[in-house]
Image (cartoon, helix red, strand yellow):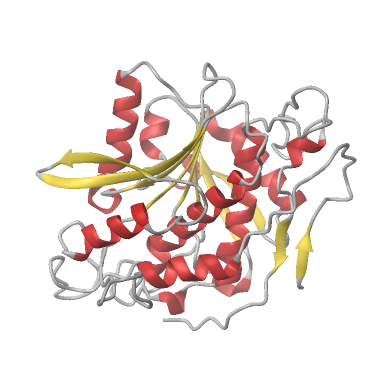
Length: 348
């Protein structure tokens, strides 16, 4: 199927909507640079690894901070993280909300990589392209930032789009960010963490969303949004307690703080997981593109988009589905990519 899914006919919406399609070419470019398949602009060598111990780690951080969103009007902030004797960097984009008293929604992914499952891999010199885990989540988050920024009326809630460092070493970046927010008396409305979202086993287009008890309703809402707006992407909400818990990604510090923390990813993992063979050939570009569009739409809707010119009132999200508000504003961008012309994916 090709084309763009603009509005869902099963529901009646009033007011204008924004046609903002997730762009597969932009996502592919980000993936290619992060995995060493393309050169960062102005640099003579590819990024071979984003391991915290590899010299290319800092080059990847510089490219993300300075180049990834060039021309969009968006700027990434950078915050140093010092854990276990390492100098790490969290990166993010803040879209300020109209009401600073409301807790923000977070969309996040980790940008570091590893290849510990490869025999004799040296973290200081060995390649760790981390295409599926987790350049896919980074590329989807960057594209979501571009899409969210197209809703020029803005949102009632602030939106934080965060690229965490040090996830592969023990959730260092996300723990530091959550600890800092708690220390300042802050909180979040919830966080959706993409990790990883590139591998599409069986061409089934299923995105699994793991949650704890506190996140059950939000996970169900995201699954409903997938059924309504997923453009062929099915979202399945799963209680992590059913398989013994899920604490190995950056959603966990949010859950431990008592906040909503959802972990979205593809499953099962490819055989290239945490190896130097986790290359771009593992990634299904169409799958990542659908995840990016749906994630942007849902996070935006839950952040309460302000009405466009001519709309009365401020829409409130329907608790059953973040994409079913009472006004056209709550459909922001809901021009999700239903089917992008697919690049052939090779299994690594």
